[in-house]
Image 1 (tube, rainbow, N blue to C red):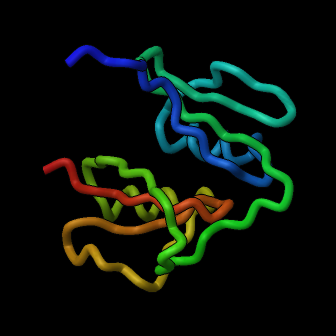
Image 2: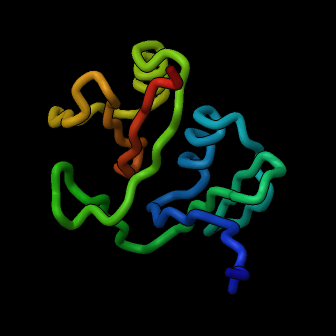
Amino acid sequence: MPALAEFTTVILDCADPGPLADFYRAVTGWEVTYRDEDCVQLGNGGQIQLGLQRVDGYRPSGWPDVAKQAHLDFKVIDVGHAVKELLAIGATMPEFQPGGDEWVVLADPQGHLFCLVGSD
């Protein structure tokens, strides 16, 4: 079936896109492809970018919470090492961890949830 549209960007609403972009630059190694006062986009030259967009009154969802709409997944070589490094740059680890040995749930500095999965 031919595509009707091309998927280009995942956009996270946030309180302040600048510091959050710095966090995700450290996570992904991606560079800033666009920046203004209310929006920062990151990419690596591939088809998909990560956008961070200022929203007045932004409030992160809780965890666990049925109001959570989405989260990001990242594949890492060493989950334990990645958790340690991400906690050092501002991520937090929620108490509720449903992944067992399969994955770890973290939250970025503004409360967006993401999971780390080992690359096997």
